[in-house]
Length: 141
Image (cartoon, rainbow, N blue to C red; front, top):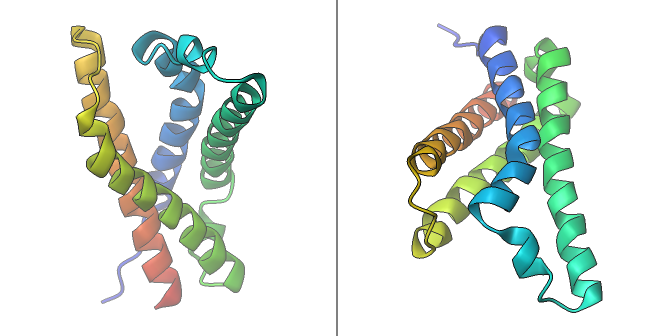
């Protein structure tokens, strides 16, 4: 019996990735006070930090758009499908691993919204890692 990831799950993951891209500035500003921390860096390092923040936001949005617009192409077993799902899988698995390894050391503000928001965001990250890893495996099998 062949298992296939349903399109609705890929699209749901895509919508979640776009959500993370859109909510990212709010989290940086309200939860992490990121902008005040960045102001303490030298000007070039400020720009580098901002650029990487935009890369993350852009990748999340782009991965989501790909998932929503062409979910069937992400699971058709072509070389491109393998490459894209492998890339996105590595991205999200790396994010989850980083989240587990490093983020518990840091203190997130104790507001109820932020506590539940962190659970929700972590659940989304695990969903993305799982969906894309399964897509990658499905494509190479």
